[in-house]
Length: 142
Length: 310
Image: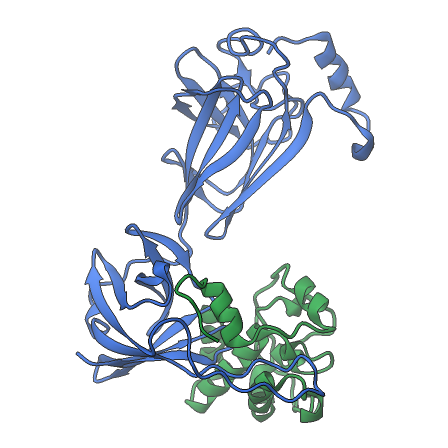
């Protein structure tokens, strides 16, 4: 796809990042983005695992986000200590960024959920602590 | 404004609850809200109509009267964060708005007691914020109108206009991120970089039964490579992008959001025009000097990379 020099930045980014998938979770995402409340990060639940993270079979139509789900499965104890900044933390039943990758799987269509997960994973790989990762997530998405 | 029989009647009526959706009002209720860099400025007011009454000022609104630029309940101004208005510091909060009207200069009065009827007028109080303004002569409007005719990166013009007079107030907000950078930090980033867009991923298939679309590899607007010249000017880290992907991205200011992390801000005519807070520019350093950078999108995927050439 060729872009003219008059192409707007937002059109370009939308095309670049593949912001097209707005499925069943779309209205949920839209509602969730309305308000941010208490910015405190949750405490990781003892013994938390990635057992409830959506399996690949649930991601067939969302291939662009698969790498984010793969990353999350490696560090459930880290992302369970991060508050999601897309607004979904306001939804009953959501505990942490890990919740975005479970159940309705908001992270399948939400680039903020995906971005926070990927960022947490690469910072963890770089040896950053949970507090340092939280600070970076807040700086980037808060 | 003179106290009319109608005003007295209305004062009585407002004491009783009524359904808002079935009321025809001589001065209909309106709200206008403007966000500037995260600060929300909201004006709630009722809109009187001139209805052929002339002149309004000096007759309907008498000289020396402390008048709410609206009708019925006093016009309110709600500020979500601290601002300055015409250079006067205004703490965040909700205020009733009043104007003491004179032939030449008017006095704007912001009263923290925001729930007030338009009569009786508020008495001077140390909690009130007062400053003088000079109204402009305008044509109309027949219906009193609050608006925000000018918006900038750091503030807006908030205007009240009615019946041949307007008052323009210069509102300046607190920046969410300063666009200046400490001089001690700048040298590590200053230099020339060769920039290249990253290959774009294939868009998601609309129908899972359909064959997956091919990845697009012809890149974003313009040539594959472009040059970033990063300079430190007037306390800002400025980028000259040649050729830019969009006209408004010819000149960027890098706004620090973390250690070696920046948001790009488009500069137009030397002023900040738009901050792309959905993007982050992450510099990589070696021996205290940037060797390159990555631009990442909201999903944290790399959109483009720069490598230092000079």
